[in-house]
Amino acid sequence: MSRKTTFALAKKNNIPELLEMMEEFYAIDSYPFDPDKASRLIEELIATPALGRLWLTFQGEELVGYIVLAFGFSFEYAGRDAMIDEFFIKEPARGKGLGKATLEYVELQAKAVGIILSTWK
Image (cartoon, rainbow, N blue to C red):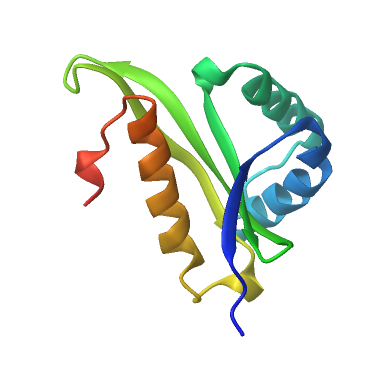
């Protein structure tokens, strides 16, 4: 039986789990990871929606990943634009369509706040 994929905006109480995933993500390419700095940045993003969004990806009740959509401004795109700054799915959950589902969800959420992501496809 497959478990339903759902998404939720991150909250401050999610920071410990986010830091664990971020550390795993950064380790893939041996990027330096500073948990204190990352925690401050997560708090800032959560507290300031004009900067972007941080969503959690769940498979059933299990937290399996996260994605950060950072907002910007572009004359080329006639106003607000966005980029995926970070996108991580835990290794055991990969290859099950969760990445695709997450991207589709983020595209819908971006459109809902007036950002068209036509260059993704």
